[in-house]
Length: 233
Length: 233
DNA sequence: TAGTGGTCTAGACCACGGC
DNA sequence: CCGTGGTCTAGACCACTAT
Image (cartoon, rainbow over all chains, first blue to last red; front, side, top):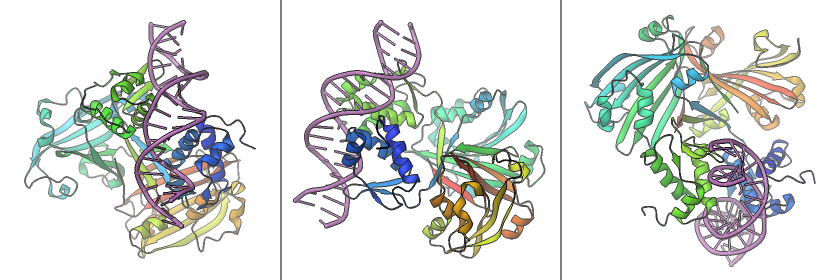
């Protein structure tokens, strides 16, 4: 047997993965049960289970009680993006970080945000605009709306020492959120911030988070021209 | 004890998660060992291990042998994007899908792609441009470079019935890849495809994949104006 | 070297869902 | 019903690393 001496669940997973990728098992096919595989690999069923769960998490197989495990017909491509603390990301690259709060104030929630930020009519939110710099060059333009009713201690913060980004990550745990990524043309404020021309294509990420008490924050991070968000698959 | 009778690893994970989120354990703090937690919860160490591994996978705690488990100081935001088969994505929304191959031909690899697509000098690649439509409207502009030396059966495919996207997903298993997301301004071809003006900000995703034999394909998918790639967190 | 997490085992019971 | 995967257990050994 080609897999003799495969000991750890990772080796078993890799062997199963090979059979899926090289179509030893066709897409849609039922693969042997855990007990049978455990016999083949000479290990406990638990270990096969661990390997198969890993493949199922990756979307390469589908598992159902009684029905068994089947090779996925169209395995999806998945990409996990990690959105880091900006300061740490910059410093990890060896750059020097600083940020500047450009605007801060309370205002009624802009009407066009009602969809992603469900608040009572006329509710006031804290609005901030922050520029994050890497080695003195603008790197990210951050615009944020914060539901004051859900972040009571925030009033004491002036964001001089730590950014709203860091403060919220550490102080306003969320139970759910949405994230979206898109392109937008530089408006006057963005063009000015990044010293580029109006309409320049910029990459942006928007995140809204909430907890049991309702929405917490909506933040849009717009990246400097040329930015790429990368991941390996 | 507030957590008496918590039986499954999910209940235990949720309780540990609560302690992290509500700062019962401060960021950076060392939390009790698996043996101690197993005693507290009245379960096997394995079960606590499963719960803690889940939190570690999510980046909320850091685990190291001998050093123990610590609450992450700055838990990263992670977003998992699923890049589906385009046809299925469109049809899942109730739309009708079709695509049109706009260009196809072999050519030397463009020099600027040498970095992400390492091939011998002067190697020829298959280059295709495909437009994907949803309900008759252009949805995605796909430009693809395929290493013919690594996809031998591809010559027989004319992509009339299935797209290069589907063909490669099912026939060219990869062992590794990179993915990046960015914004780009519409060039003449993109502006024409999406019936928009030159320079319009467009969202694009680029994926390069390889296997043991070398690079397989490099594909750039450029989305129609206004597109957002969404995920929940 | 000693303490911590990582993994494996053999067995058991349970939950789901085709039959 | 009953076969399948999902989970849990009690114990064991191993790998890593702080001290």
